[in-house]
Image (tube, rainbow over all chains, first blue to last red; front, top):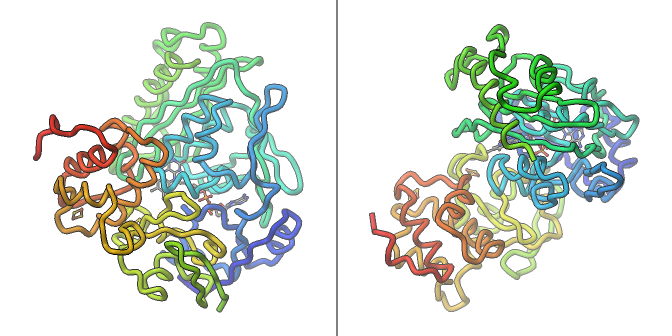
Length: 260
Length: 161
Ligand SMILES: Cc1cc2nc3c(=O)[nH]c(=O)nc-3n(C[C@H](O)[C@H](O)[C@H](O)COP(=O)(O)OP(=O)(O)OC[C@H]3O[C@@H](n4cnc5c(N)ncnc54)[C@H](O)[C@@H]3O)c2cc1C
Ligand code: FES
Ligand code: FES
C-alpha cells in the first residue's frame, strides 16, 4: 500500500468536509477497498472512515419503509429480519468476518457487477440517500463499478419500501463467494420487479420481459419460453455468457417459487 | 504516525502506527503476538481472524487505527494464564483438528465467535460459519468434529477420517 492518513469523523458534516479534498476517499468496512489498496490500484492521500459516524448507523422501520444507515454492516442487516428477503441476502454475503465489517453503503458505492445488494436495491425500488440528495435506484446504477454518486458524495442511508413478497436467489461462485448470477424478485404495489446481478457487462439491471410476464401471472410457469440474450453478458473462466443467460432464467424461476 | 490504544486479551496496550498499518501487522510486528497468522493477505483464508469488540474480523482487512479504543481478543488470550487450553483448543487437540496448524488460530477464533452466537450448532452450521476459514491440510472433517465436541455435543458417531 502507498502511505495515507486516516480520519475518523463523528458526523456526516465532518466526513463530507474531509472528503472535500480531492485526494481523499471514503472508507466503509474496507472489505473491498483494503484489498484494492494492497494491489496499489488506488492511491488516496487520506481515507475518511465512516464507521464512527453515528448518523449512519441504525435500522428503522416506519410505515412499510425500512431505512438502513449507510454504515450498517451486513451482519446487522442479516440480524434485523423486518425485510426477510433482504436479511437473507445479507446473511449470505461472503463469510461471517466479511459481514461483520462490510457495509451496505460501501457495497452500493462500489457497485461490483457480481455484488448482491445492488440487486436488492434495484428490485425493491429503493432510494439511495446521500449527504446532498436522494437518488432512486433506477437512476443510481450507471454501469460496471459506476454509479450516479459524485466525487466525495456519501451514502448516508438506503430506504427500502418493503415489498408484498420478495426473494433473492444467488448461484454461488464458491471461490470469490460473490454471485455467479443472482436474481432478486419483488412484488410491489406497482407490479413485479426483477433485478439481475452477476450476469451483465453493464452491471445490475432489470429484466423487464420477466417483470411483464410476472405482473400478469406471478408464477414460475409464467416464465416458460422467456429467455435472456447472451449478448453483452459476462463470460469468464467461471461461466460462459450462454451459461449465465441460462442461469438468469433458472434463478428467476426459483426466486418466484420461493418468494414470501 | 498516530498513537493508538486498545485492550488486547484484557491488557491495555498502545503504539504508534501509520494510516496503512493493518491490525494484523500491529498485532504481529508491534505487539509480537505472532499467533495471529497471515495466510493470504487478500481477505480469503481467515488465518488472521481475531475478535474486535466481540466480533470475528479478518485482521488483515482492517486498519490498526480502526481498532483504537477497542477490545481485541487473539489466540494468545484463549488459554488460561497457566497454559490450560480452553474447551475449543482442547477439542482440537483431542480430535485431531489440526495438522500443520497454520489455519488453527483463525479456526479457533471463528469457532469461539460461532459458539457464542450459537452454543449448539449442527455440523452444517459449523461448516457454513467456517466458510471464510481455509485449511489446506485436514479436509475440515476433524475441525468440524472438534467444534461440535467443544460445544458439548456427542461426536462419537462422527467417524474419524
Ligand atoms: C471474501 C469476500 C467475499 C465477499 N462476498 C460478497 C458477496 O457474496 N456479495 C457481495 O455483494 N459482496 C461480497 N463481498 C464484498 C463485501 O460485501 C464488501 O463489504 C462491499 O462490497 C464493500 O463494502 P465496504 O463497507 O467493505 O466498503 P469499502 O471496501 O470500505 O469501500 C468500497 C468503496 O465504496 C466507497 N464507500 C464506502 N462506503 C461509502 C459510503 N457510505 N458512501 C460512499 N462511498 C462509500 C469507498 O470509497 C470504496 O470506493 C465480499 C468481500 C470479500 C472480501
Ligand atoms: S490473511 Fe487475512 S484472510 Fe487470509
Ligand atoms: S492444519 Fe494446515 S492449514 Fe489447516
